[in-house]
Image 1 (cartoon, one colour):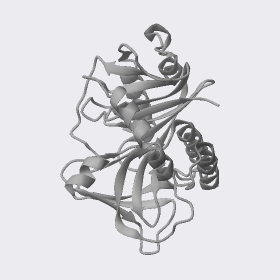
Image 2 (cartoon, rainbow, N blue to C red):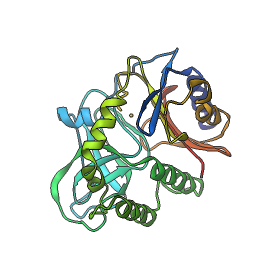
Image 3 (cartoon, rainbow, N blue to C red):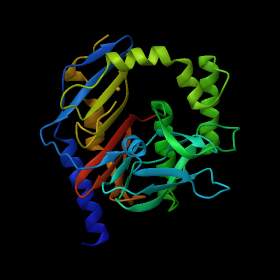
Image 4 (cartoon, rainbow, N blue to C red):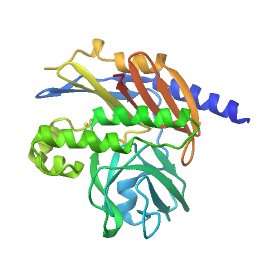
Amino acid sequence: MTSKAAFASAADAGRRWLETLHAAAPVAFRAITVLPLRTHAPVDPPWLLLPEALADGSAEVSEISEGGSVPTLHVINRGSRDVLLLDGEELVGAKQNRVLNTTVLVRAHSTLEVPVSCVEQGRWQYNGRRFSSSAHSLYASMRLKKAAQVHASLRLGQSFSSDQVAIWSDLGERAKALKVKSAAMAGAFAARAPELDDYTAALAPGTDQVGALVYGGGAWWGMDVLASPRLWRAPEGRPVETGMEGLTALLSASVEIFPSVGAGDDCRFTGSVVVGAALVVDDVVAHAMAFPAG
């Protein structure tokens, strides 16, 4: 299959699978409403999520060299199962905390350099040689901006690069708004830990859930979907019949396909009201995300 045909196949497979998604009854807690997403066409590829692989020792994430490089990390997968790294997930330790710039599938028994952004301005010294998972992800508004930055970089024929200065600035403003002394993303999560625990418990995923559309104060915040319920480890009620516009907008958006960092194809969606991306591997949507366009 030619590269062009392969890209077309990935886009078609992604759209077909996204069309199988349907919403269950909304779950609300305080100002947030979640529409759980399920599919009529479940798949269960034998992948591990990165936190699982780090915990069992089959994967390792480190700086790319002793000196390190802010936008790049080194991943080793020693295990017999592919490992899925999700866009926006935070890794802590080594010379400074980072988040993934895109979703990446690292094949079994392989190594890969992955694109990241720093979420801990000011520290550049070792706190351990290996990264661990914080179990947190970059917040939705910044993930939207980062997705647009990465897409712009890809269109210029460059790498999966973000605007690091803009990310630091956004984190600083968020810290001021939350009255948190540290501009590191971890500081904001630590300051709100009890409140976040309440949300996590109240909005826990249900049976057969593969993703979620999330609303705050009646406005759509974003969407995340994974390939299977096993992989899904997440996030005043909004009626289901009026809650699917985010997914509908994604299905009607234009799509551009780029070679991914690891396995599969990186699909970037752009529409008048939506920005999104998906990693498609062997005709399986490993991860899809979408946010309202600014």
